[in-house]
Image 1 (cartoon, rainbow over the protein chains, first blue to last red):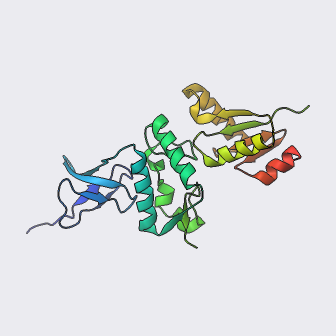
Image 2 (cartoon, each protein chain N blue to C red):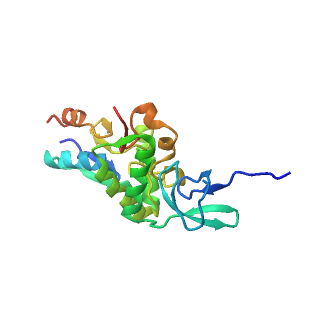
Image 3 (cartoon, one colour):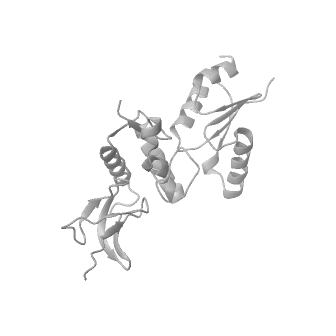
Length: 136
Length: 83
């Protein structure tokens, strides 16, 4: 009997695994369906991992936010540019794109933060920063 | 003469910037602590102060006399500063 295990890709931003789609191969650029991060597929010791091709750049965080908003059907608040600027500041000082409105520098507060990924925008109409808003 | 207002802010937070801009525009002299830019020890101390004052760590925090305003709130700022 052959056991077909579903292959998954580890996302280093949201620290979750998503399904490996048919036809993907090493080096392909894919979007994490959970956080919107663009990832380059690589084979690690423990399976597929996504690498961040433009790590730490403004392009990376802009694209991640846009993709996340697109995936969830959210729109941006009027603080968008200030938040991007704040996220760049967080990267410079704390090494990653942590929520600019908080003092939590753990992976779960990488933008989009865990509460946001978990549905805060549906619940409250907005994320903590008013960066992502529910469409009205 | 009452004490100068004190602001606890994050350098990356848009709402902290708005609060500071509001105070600047109204020519209010204040002390500002940018918590995220402090060294580790001072940062811990500032975060403890914020926690003690407000029961959480949300920013900005503005202290005007006995009044503690959490978040950017122009109406409360105006009232507290008698603007």
